[in-house]
Each structure stands twice: as C-alpha cells, then as structure tokens.
Figure 1 (tube, one colour):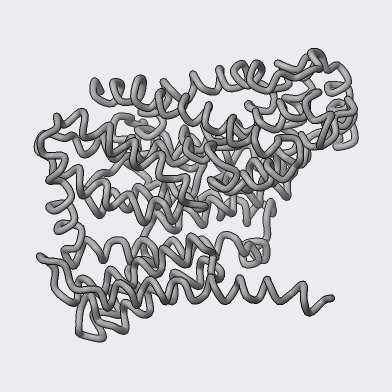
Figure 2 (cartoon, rainbow, N blue to C red):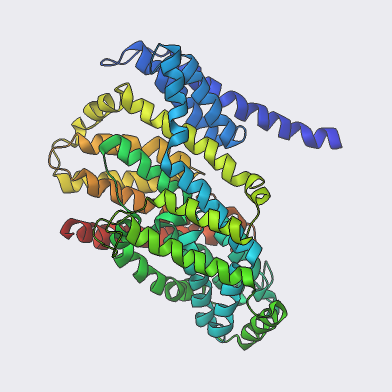
Length: 490
C-alpha cells in the first residue's frame, strides 16, 4: 500500500521536473523568429524554462532560479567572456531591493519572537469584536497594522492573523462544513480579502513588490520611494480597507450578528500574556523608527532638520533596525541564519531579477515590444494602457506565484507599453505593480495564504471562486476608476 501510494507522487514529481526541460528544448529547436539572433532566442528558452519550473514548483524555487542563472552564465548568452559572464551572474546579489526583502523578513521574526504581532491582533479583536461587523474590522485592522513591516503576506496573514482568528468560529459552534456560514466564512474571507489590499498598499507588505519595482527600474527606468508608493495607492487602499468588511458581510451573509464572547476570549488571551514585555516595547519602537525612516529618509519631498532629504536608503533602514534588534536582544543572529524562507527568497529573487534584466540587456525585450505593440498601434494610449493592465491582472489565473507572474509578464507588458507613442509608461508600471497584491484575491492558489484559507473548510470551493471573482472585479475597477486618475493628476 505504501509503495502504491507513493508512486503517483513520484510520477507527478518527475513530470514537473521534466516539463521545464521540454519547454527549453521546444523553444531551443524552434526556428529563430525574424529580428532575433540565435543567442537571444536560446537565452529566452532558458528564461521560459525557469518560469515554467517556478509555476510548476518542479523543485524549491531558489534552486530553480539558481540553476537557470548558472545555465545562462555558463552558456555565455550575456557575454561570451567567462569572467564578465560571472560578474553578470553575481551582480544581482548586490541589488538593494533583494536585501530589503531579506531584511524585512527578519522583521517578522521580531514580531513573532516578541509576541507583539499576536498582542496587536488580540487587542483589536477585544476592542472591536463585540459584533460580527466589528469583528471583521478587527481582523482587517490586524493585517493593516502588521503589513508595513511584514513583507510576506503568508507570514503576516497565514502566520500571525490566521492562527488567532481560526479560534473564533468554534466559539459559536461554527465548524468547517455545514455550520461554516454561522460566522466562520465571513471571518476567514474578510481576513483573506484584507491582506490582498494591504499587500498593495505598502511597498514592504509583499515581497514581490520590491522585485517588480526592480524589474520596472531596469526595464523602463521607473523608481519610487516608500512614501510615493503609499501615496499613489492610498485613495483606493484606504477606501478598500473601509469597504472590505462591509462588502464581505452581504456576500458571506453570516448568521451570527453579535459576538460578545469573542471580546471576552481575546481579553482572556491578553490576560494570560500579561503586560507588554521589554522586547515588545523595543520592537514597537523599532517599527516606528523604521516607518519614520522609510517615509522621511528616502523621500525627496521631505526635509528632516540637520539631515535634509534622501538621507538614508530604504534598504539601509532595514540594516539599521536589524542591527538594533540584535543589540537589544529582540532577536539573535541564529534566528536570522535559520530563517529558511528569507534565504530561499534571496536566491530566487536574485536569480529572477538577474535573468529578467538579461532579457533587456540582450535586446529581446526591445524586439518583443516592437513586434507586439503593432496590433495596439491604432488604439488610443489610454485604451492600450487599460488593455495591458487588464491582461496583467487577469492572466494571474494561470499563475500560482505572484513573483513568477511579475518576472514573466511585467517586463513584457512594460516593453509593449513603451513602444506605444504617448502611453505614460510610469503610470502603466505603477498600475501593474499595485495590482500584484490585489490579484491575490482571485483564486485559491493566487497568493501565499490563499491555500491556507481555502483549506480551512470555512469557505466552500464554489464560494472561493465566486467571492474571488466578485472582489477581483471590485479591486480591478478601483485601479482604473480611482488609482489611474489619481496618478495622472499627481
């Protein structure tokens, strides 16, 4: 029995391992398109194989990226000189955005070890959880307060918020299955829908945000600060944070309208935690410091007395705060070394950014833009931009990773957009980057925490797809009707 049960898994693994090689070989052997040389086409074959491996999760994503980077470097696609090719391979490891992501992951260690994240969530539930709608706001606000300093929505929503709120439905006899609708469906969906919004609202709330910005900078020269990112999305982001619990209410139709027992439960949990510890106070102070430096230190529009503007880089802020966390004992260096997810992100983001920039360096992106901008040439710049944003957003149904989506699709969309006369490429880039968090709501596999909420049993399979479509349409409409005009007048 054991052998037969493992055979399908082994077969599935072999298929996923072979698929990227098949993609590589098929493109490699395909006749080189007009306008490209053999070197450019073969490099694209390597890139396509890496993206296939990431989508199928043929092996750990860090391994997929590292193998692809090695093949591209050894093949000499960027530069035939072995020394220069090696320099290209290693250049991504010095990218500040990659270290920003790794460093911000360490922030989540501080949240977790100090228990500050858990306390924040419980306080909100205690204060707002006396009725079901208020409970929805407590859940959404928990994610909102944790988001600026937690770059993984999986760690934030799945690792901090979900373990707390999963205790709530059972207090009312709401279990996965027939009784899920009493209150469980509403609580779970509100939490999931909210984390999609916060992931777009804050630059440091979703790891792929930094990767996407690095791609946009390399592809079309777009660069924004932490504060500019927030301000650009704030009109829609803040509105959605207000609306998500309200809209989830009629969509999920919870049977329980009041929940005084939830507040009592949260109060009991807080009582058991006791007063705020030394490490919690330190962690809170460090997060406030990080927020101040991110907003003021990297913004050209804000001058700090004696320091001026642009006095510290966003990634430098991360190193400052991590150093203070180590000095004060909030975390230990062993915690950083053992944070597997951070180092996995480090390797695959570095590999993806380097490979994506390679497409631009060898001229593949320019060729693609020239070829595929032709069908849009007769359209107005505004219409073309809306169509490109729509393509970028809704094609995510075919991806299970926001990172691989950004790496595969963003360079193409930006390249096509830059080839259309009169199209504001910066606006296009911002709309695409803002959509990364929002698009996570559309399917049970669209973003990191999605499988967790889908697998909770509180949201039915049909419900999840239906709710995802409703909120996906709402979020996408907000991008076009609120964020687009806002970016155009700024």
